[in-house]
Length: 140
Image (cartoon, rainbow, N blue to C red):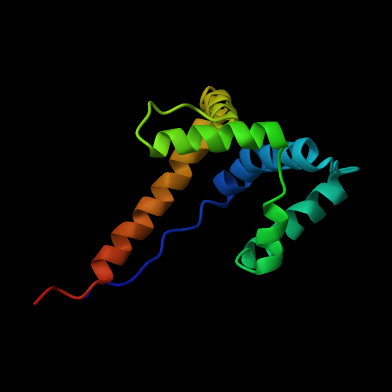
């Protein structure tokens, strides 16, 4: 069996993607959906840490109940109707969330530095996958 050498974690790309993609989207979602606005970098960092803690426990009943209350009634009702029609076989209609995600993805995809960071991080993940495949025992 070959020596196991895990590739170096692409910390610079990871940090860039958190700063340029995750953090702005996360903070905008907090402000838009919940009216929570950080008062400076220290509070932004605290909100990100809090999100990490909540993500670790997202399967708990309290977090599920808190997540159920987001959005407005009209938007949620419209999105639910669209999803129901989609499930019944009608032509898929994009929800308001779908449109926001597509616009955000388009805006970020147009930024060559984001594209470069994604490619670097994807290369790292590909190397991990290749190493994992090498470590599997041969099939009998």
